[in-house]
Image (cartoon, rainbow, N blue to C red; front, side, top):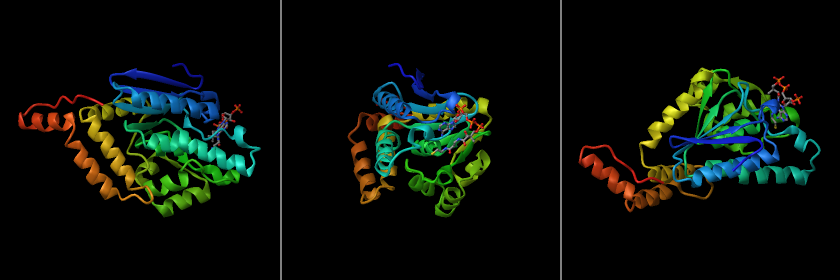
Length: 260
Ligand code: COA
């Protein structure tokens, strides 16, 4: 598939999706959101893709936010629709993919950019990265899940401060807050993501997708995560991967999982 605003490349079990609007600091316009949806969906459905890495092109930005020029004159209704459609197409969609998605935060991750990184299953940042939810400085609030996912990741008080001040934190502080899992020099960012991906790929994709679902259940209203875990745990016993994993252990060899 060819895209106007993103690149999608597959190598060694990993699909790397790069948001590619560097002149606009990779801001998320409508078309980019739609293309990201399509590329993520394709990678998730691709049996050979075991891990997805999401990053931004250039050295300056992961994503500097939703494209402000697209919504500056929106009405109340249009604003609500923008958030609803975006959450459905990209943010909730990413969080609920069964294939692991790592955000490689290579620079500014602001507004919708940080919300996109937070929708990924975890984040790795380069040392120049800066993160924030500056929406209140524009007279609006985060609308792509930021008011929910930021407190989940860093706690309510810190999230309140970040949203109220509209300020940015640097990569080191993001690491201290637990917003990102690792910080490395920019040249090391993708290599580290690929190294982590290769560790993930040694394990059962089927079990990992069940684990993503069970962990996410903890954050869904009206759903008992323990019940989801029990069901998912039981389901694993019926899989080829479980047979292979346990047999390999007992035979003292490395497991060779059948795949997604
Ligand atoms: N939406 C639309 N365009 C954006 C954008 C966004 N969120 N973020 C950056 N851009 C565009 C700029 O308008 C500029 O375009 P131009 O060259 O056609 O004028 C280009 O990207 C480069 O940005 P610029 O502001 O010149 O870079 P900078 O290094 O001076 O500042 C930032 C970098 C990230 C601090 C600044 O771009 C910024 O504050 N962006 C908006 C962040 C934001 O509020 N995001 C939340 C949106 S809800």
